Length: 258
Ligand SMILES: Nc1ncnc2c1ncn2[C@@H]1O[C@H](COP(=O)(O)OP(=O)(O)OP(=O)(O)O)[C@@H](O)[C@H]1O
Ligand SMILES: [Mg+2]
Image (cartoon, rainbow, N blue to C red; front, top):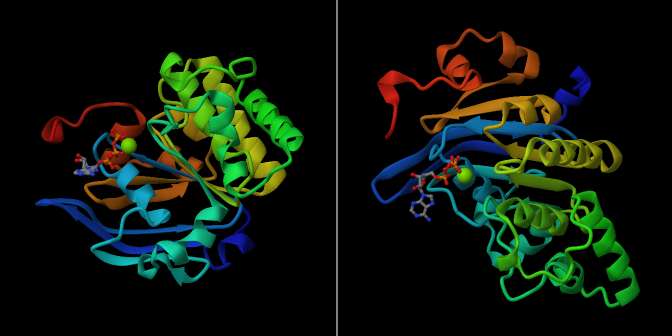
């Protein structure tokens, strides 16, 4: 990303985000800025709070402390009705797909269009087919979610998230559980959405191949804080032991299973 872009104010600015669930401190003052048009990859170990973090960005969880500024407005202060226009700008790919079990693939993908009161069935059909084709899921329109594999569910959820391209897309583990070829096509799709539609993205992942493919900047969440953030080159050349262990997939003996 060019230097002059970094001097603009961030599209999303998370400041001192703190979250506790019961006695557990999950986020302990996360500071993270996301700039328009970039793809930020968020790394961190399993159970570290990445999904919890993403839920705050669309107002599904309220921070115990801190602010989440979206275009300068603190969304933590907004009620459900006030959140609506912001949520319309943000597409979210949930980690588990979160498809509607009672709707087939076609109707799941068409859902956001119908929800936004688009009534032209021919247009809906064209868009659904195009979106499914982008995720290599053409021909599965009539299947019910229960009859799909985990990876297929994820791709249908992605087709639904991008059907009316939002200005921000939050991806929670977009390539987890997918074979390398489908993963590669998802990575290309994330890049395509960024390049063609100037989408701003946050990609939560464990997948270093995907990180290197889609990331402009990378942040590592560790023990409830952003332990590292920087470019892919800075990640690759970092000598910080926590960063190295994560990038090289080594378990840290002093801090194995929590
Ligand atoms: N609704 C909830 N109720 C209670 N605890 C929760 C809830 N959601 C998350 N947690 C806890 O918060 C912590 C962080 O969970 P989170 O799902 O954000 O981790 P993650 O970094 O996304 O992990 P993974 O990489 O495995 O998806 C975990 O200890 C989890 O048990
Ligand atoms: Mg998660």
